[in-house]
Length: 450
Ligand code: COA
Image 1 (cartoon, rainbow, N blue to C red):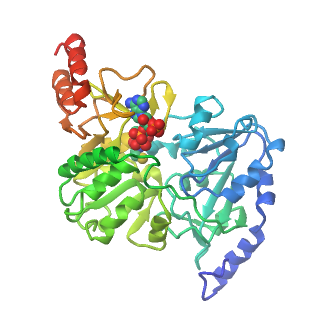
Image 2 (tube, rainbow, N blue to C red):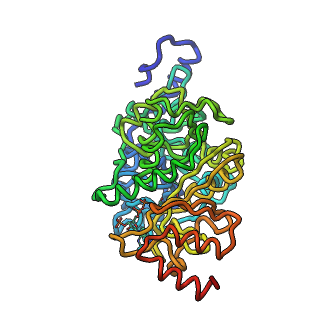
Image 3 (tube, helix red, strand yellow):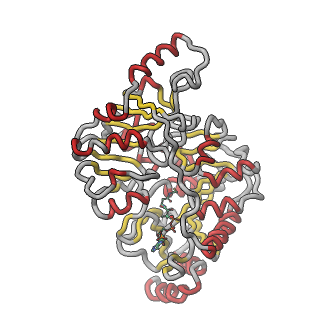
């Protein structure tokens, strides 16, 4: 595999190739270095090194209290199955769908943390890493392997790990940017070619009515986005609906924690050019990718894209250097004072803080920037309002009422920044679902003195 990209061998190339060959081993041999009580960091998202992970899990009878840190991983994680917790304990820095039950049943745990700081936990020594499990592209002629489609959450922690086990995988695209690790910094190399896991772009079972609601949300968000803006947005039906409504815009840029398929049509149609960006002009800046093979293929060796560690991409002071920065993030519920719950449904942990606050704050500080929270007005077939009098007991505030600016539902836009409690309540009631406006008004009159 090492000769794939190497045409001319100099003495320097021969030196790292020799080391590469010495480090070659099997997954089973490599994971023998893991001991009970170790802390493991795993490359997350769609980029997890499953061959190595599964070899580690196969050692379960010999291992106790191994802590596994990462943000969400797409795919089947055997260490999350009931009964595994005495061997492997997952500590989620953002809870994925496959980890939700384990966290809420106490078989796994969760660290609430801004994405801009999650990698710094490993730098500051809050979490010591014994072993990093990474999934990288084959080395280039200089001996550098790319972390590929997922750089942001792994490069910095892996640099702090005592031991690095790399799955060298020719299916991993060569993502550019601050995205490389040299062969000399890897301790064990497992050559194994394995397709990356894909995240379907549209949630299963989504109805036509829901799609219409998302389209309306998308239209209202699009009205707030001026030509020349730089965008951050998450994944799923809502961001996709926003993107679909941006086809007539000009010279948009992207600075986002997460890259995904939804951006591709706008690049292809010349809407995303990055030419007006005030930081990294002409480049899409991202930390990681959640998407399909189409997005992974686009990333390979593409100089339009630069991946960087999350503590850089998500740093609000870096984000703010992009003029006209527009951040679009979703929510579980918003109360009438503007508190935004995004990580839990009542006492049930659902996801995490992620980059929401990083980007809300960065966009708020950006010249001409717009922080947007967008959510359908209801869920569960219009039976539950998401604009609520008070958050559910146990709900976590991710974006505080001090940080909130624009809230968008399918009924319009409420601009809350600088507004009083009365003004906020009125604005939010006006974008709530009509079925719930009377009860929200009644509450506001009784409790907020409206
Ligand atoms: N009360 C009860 N249930 C609710 C609810 C509420 N207020 N809001 C949502 N739900 C339920 C939905 O009905 C749905 O249930 P289902 O899976 O049985 O259909 C489930 O919760 C998920 O809701 P959905 O609206 O589909 O969520 P989503 O996938 O669009 O994600 C967030 C929305 C807020 C959870 C997600 O954006 C998130 O985790 N954000 C936090 C971090 C962040 O913003 N990071 C930056 C971008 S990556």
